[in-house]
Length: 325
Length: 40
Image: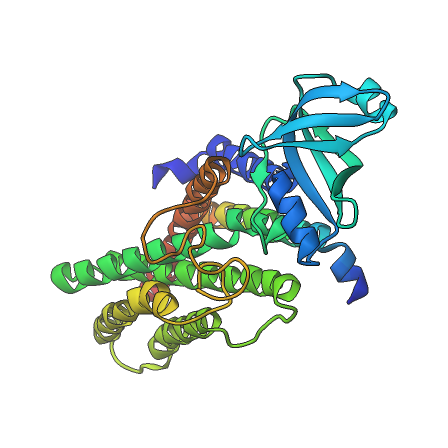
């Protein structure tokens, strides 16, 4: 693709990626009064970040009256300092609130942000870890697109017998494998903080592991065959098409028919009718998080196309060198 | 693991940044090398 020959485009992509990483971790998470209460009552966490609009403030009792994102009103015990120096009536505040079970009051722990540009939702059971939706989920999506493109190129190779399609199929599948590995790594790090262990053979982890083995075998098969280049490419193309048949099953069907700790897997705190992956096929995720997730998908898609492009060119150069020798 | 648990957000943030920006610079290097070879 000509696009990737432009240095300006590549630097723009790099800067956009850096900005996206920054936004993913800088944007505050803001829940509601009911989140703070529920998490404290269940003993999950004592301090919860909430997002609410300040309706009024009483300097005598130091009580601030707020309306949260579900239009529920609630009171938070603030300090004059937090009010006078940072916030005013009408401001949207993101603050850490400690819910006191005995007195049923919300106490301000820290004022995180006043009038934030955007906030991510407080997904119960995920909390700060919900940010992984901007990395892990887009990576899996791009991996699927990569495998799909690899299969299409393999079919085109079998039809047209043009070696360039074979090179593209190889490059797409290699990039798909890399993205699957990255999705597995980010998922595994997430699991360490969410489930307490890096790997516990959850149905999702098992299915992605099988997928890694299937596509790993594609490259092993290719390098171990001692046939002519033409026959090698044909066998690899057929294997690639067969391998892709398992992808929808491993990526979409298996996680939906088994009980899993994975968000949306029907178990755990964020299970059941969960944000993205659920049986009713509806997306329940907050618009801001979802939109930022699409930005990630878009950026990672360019990274994949670039990766595929560079690898195809390397393969072309290698083949040219072999022909010359 | 105490350090990891208390600084989960920073750890994950740094890992993500390293993965993405590392991949970007690695790709940029590859792109330059491929261009050089293509022009030979």
